[in-house]
Every structure is written in C-alpha cells, then in structure tokens.
Length: 124
Image: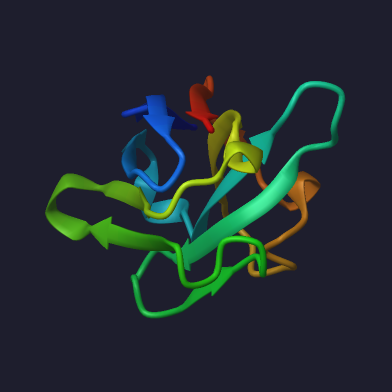
C-alpha cells in the first residue's frame, strides 16, 4: 500500500500563487507515476498534471500549462504543484494520486492510490 497526504491548500486572490505538496509513504518503490487531479462542485474529477516517479517526464492539462509546475523532491518522496497566475476557475478540491502502471496518465481510474484532498479557493 501507498499512503498519500496532501498539504498546502488554501485561499488566494486571482493572479496569486499557492503551492501544494503530496507526501508519499509505504511501498513507494511500486509507484510509476504521481498525478494531481481536481474536482469542483458538480463536476467530474479533472486531470491537472502528472510526473513519473523518476521525475523525468511531466504532463499538464492545457488549462494549467504555463501556470502550474509539477516537481518531485526525491529525498522526501514528495510531489509538489506550484500554482501561479491563479484564476477563479482553478477553485476545486485538489487530489494527489499514485499509480503503479504506465497507462494513460490523465485518466483517474488508472490511479491506484489517492490522498484525502485539499481545498483551493481563488477569489476574483
């Protein structure tokens, strides 16, 4: 099993920044990729960004490309999501996820483990 704990959510003004972190523990040697997803009220869970456990390969949804940066802190087994130029439409609960497989990185059901989620609220 892999345990994921998110931190860093909160409130920001439009144009501001927030940084999310996801600490992984347990059988981290089994992880192939980590991802961030978000879910706004009444909407489906949406892919935000993903990074391989090695930290070499990243992918972003078009809606956040150029504004968000995903990175991995290898010694700490932590994946970070730096969110800049925030928009009100970025408001959602953000979830960290981990997968042992190398399937489609933007599909939620490809991920095996999930964190509890952290709220991000951006006001205009």
